[in-house]
Picture 1: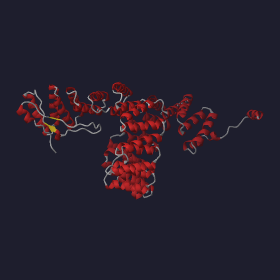
Picture 2: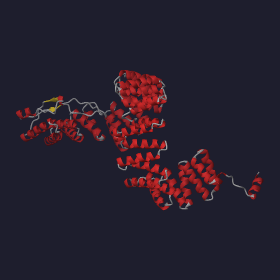
Picture 3: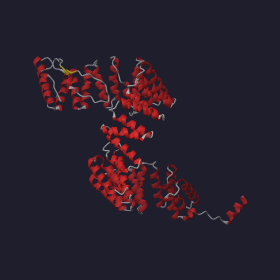
Picture 4: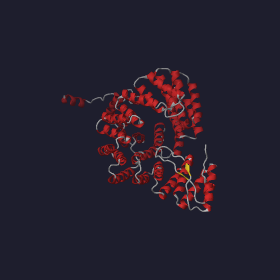
Length: 591
């Protein structure tokens, strides 16, 4: 590979100047810009003194030795001192080559300031500002490009603002509308306006702006896709698909639009046509693994299993999207009860979003078939090969061991994980929950308190510890302090409200308990909250309320073990009250 070269010796000989880069620039916003040494052209920079030339020569030598930090420092310093656009341009491209985004932005800003009519300078500055999230500053450079008569990307700024604060979006919209008064027919501005109006939920106005943009630029792909979404929301899904279908017919080679059509057809439930579109796209782009994977998933959804398998096998043969292909082949094998095939494919998933699920499925199948040690050995190997996923793999193994009642092994694997991963929060919490199931309150409390040392305001852990102390000890005041702190941190959480009501009951404060438990049950109809409230009603001589709530709970949660245990403890709950003689006479008179 050709190194960093700058023909500065010629500059020294001429004592007049030195060269710079004049690369062709395209604003492919998501593509990192890099310095291209092959694009060098010698140009003249006048006014440099001997000391500056010596520093630049030293910088060039440093660059050839890949000492980019020093070279960049010199160029930035000289560009700033001389306020010269060609030195600033050189510093910009060098910073890009060195991967120093902050320095590149400083240099590009200086470049655009010292050569205000240079479109490349403004495009570069805008791109770098967008990458840094400085959208309003990038807008100023796009505005300058508009004034220079160059192509602009206001709609891209609008798109990138989606997850920014409302104030940023509103200021962008005001700025866009200000420019629209001067450039009312500019399709990029109209598209940006429509996008920002969508964020404001002003859908009819957005549709008007997008439609105007398409009048002036019918092949504006971003505007076509935005219009399709607006029509689908304001009118009908089929109408939105029609917009995409029309645009895709006019631009059959535009991949983005064809994909939008395929996805739109899926959302509209037109899976057969979506399959045809995906097949056409995949045929046109045989080297695009993501497209082939999408086609395979469509085939699976339509029940065309053998065709889906063929597409997934093609991906494996071409070494594209291999982990995803193995995952879905594993799913298909599992559905067909080919468990050996399923385990094989799942264990071949080496990365990607399906990594954990694949290995959890493989281990579950092995454990259900009695191959427990095989599953454990494989998970251990995966922890070695994927240390970034070690915690999740420890948790998967512990959960699967619990499923087959091997609690000692589950505790041991979590203890190994805690030792190796340094008191990881999730591992400690999982071990505490197993200890709680075994009524090992000492271990449970130790682990939860270790978590609280790291995260003293963790409301979930505070509540879990406080509730456990309430249930398994008589340390009610200590439990109250923990739960009260959790409640203050998350006052609207029904689980914490339930715990607070329950500890009030244990402390003999029934009225407070009824109030809190009623609030919790109103927020979340849960069998545990119901049993707590029934018991408090019963203990407080609110027999009718207790029986009424029990009837409701039995209907909502039939065969729930918590409710069954409550009835075992208080069999009178199920017995109808015996009427007194006066009640009987009153009832007969009423009849």
